[in-house]
Length: 464
Image 1 (cartoon, rainbow, N blue to C red):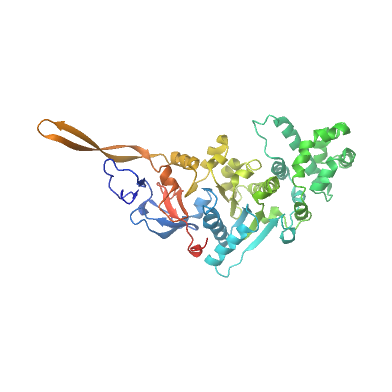
Image 2 (cartoon, rainbow, N blue to C red; image 1 turned 90 degrees about the vertical axis):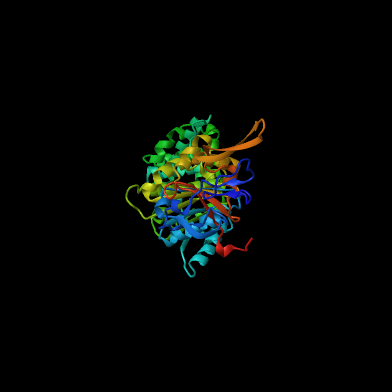
């Protein structure tokens, strides 16, 4: 085993001085794994003994997916093709509501979904509601302002647009003031019944007299009450006072975004409870702040409406957030992961490196994920974090000692001892004995040991 470069749980203790091999002695054997009723695929289980074959399909049961999942791996590690797209299709086939972000754009995720669907379920069709400000002609319409019927929806939209307040923000008080005014504008737009969009709100912000007349006209509304201190500011000073507030809305002042939010093609409040359909948000990272705000706004409303059904057993939802760190400023992932299961929402987050999560929030987010999938080629930061979470095991090792005795010459003695060693070290986590798309799966409910899987899809073998 040492000569082949990989030691498994059935191999004997390596001889003294052995080096240059990977130690997989702590990984799962077949008798360690209990997931016979799995639904969401994880490729094929890798038997940890020579010749390290991968033949048996394996996956997660729905109850484990409902404890949430984090996928960690670099670009082109296979996160989308091997896990995200298959899980979306399997979720739809199980009659889930599925919400997902396409962070690459150009319908990349949609094409991956269709590719897996055609391979796994030939002839099947799913309902896809695509919200795409880059392609208004092919997008469903969603007027988010017309759905701000309660305080929770308004607060969620405000956080999606302005971002969450941060305790260490030196301008926190100004940010909270801007959020108050943003809430007021959104409430005024809803309560007035007027057809006001993002550009209308920007126009009102730039014209103090128009804002004053609007507040006076709807003086008894929620929004008017929040905006009274704004309209009381001298008109000549309002532009300076609202410069950051205007910037938040200006990000959404995009022709495509205006078109896809101008009228209501669907009501998100209803769609998040309609089974067997995909709500797909196209918000490529290349669009910068626009993509972050648009996706944060959409996700915040999805989460609000689903959590409003907490404890009422709504239909199951699979919420997939690729490149999750980019929505951290607008979606409280820690809170979402701690509450979502109670609203029958299974959350899947994907990231390239654990260091993308802030130090003070990393443990809260990752500890609330019942399953961790670490892709081959993960960064040293990620493997170090996962190795520490796996902890240690007691491993045996041989040591050799030499002694010299007069008349009998030199002799060598061997002793066997045991000591704590990492369950899986950095090298083992980064380079599992798999094909190009391998991973280590950690879920204590289905196995007390980490599971090595080969995620290579048979229908994609030979493709670049």
